[in-house]
Length: 72
Image (cartoon, rainbow, N blue to C red; front, side):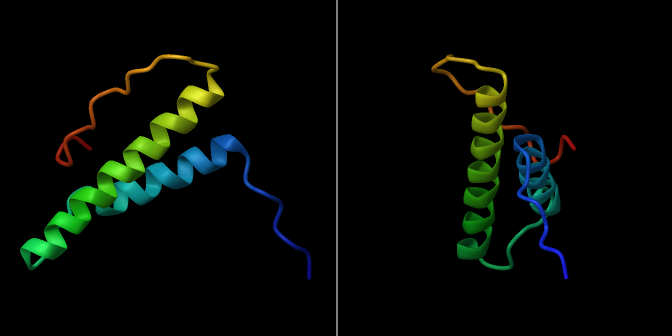
């Protein structure tokens, strides 16, 4: 059985994006659950943007605004 190769930076970015998409339109049944989903989406978005900035060699201090969960 062969081991899977490590993920490339692009693969990591795509995995983070796919995870964000899975949660993009989900709502929690409780306020706690809903707030947790919001925090997860924000964290995933931040990780995606950080990866993208590093892949592009960017040194900008500002991150783009998080997308609306209803925008795709």
